Image (cartoon, rainbow, N blue to C red; front, side, top):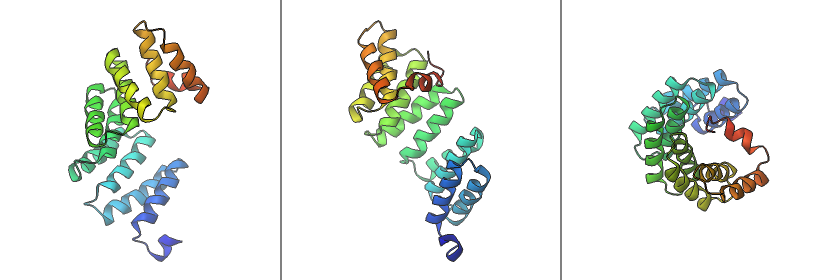
Length: 188
């Protein structure tokens, strides 16, 4: 293996960590993530990857620590800001999530996932017009984003706009189980 031949190969370690995380072998993933951070302690990418592993495992405090470190190393890391926002959202700290999504959007204005996630955060706060604006941006960037279409449709219906039903229908064509996926967000 590449790691056997070159034990300090950060790319190979990072790739293997991602595979382990996908397999939910979080301890093994973290072993590789830790080695990456050890070999490149001044690079944000290693902290982002390890933060993602912690977040997937549900260790939000450790994830936040790593995303904070990544942002400290690279204030322009949209991926670190976006994922820190996701963790804040998972913890119920919606205002911090919105701030991080906004910072990620400022850095990468074509970041459809950040618009979509911020739209959901606004929707959860009952800020319907802001939610619709962010969902509009996400759909404009990627018209096949089922969650953004469903979220926009939900927001429109909450506002009394019957055209929301069309967005919901379009989302269901893309992803038939989108209602159950959206329900997991906790927003009704």
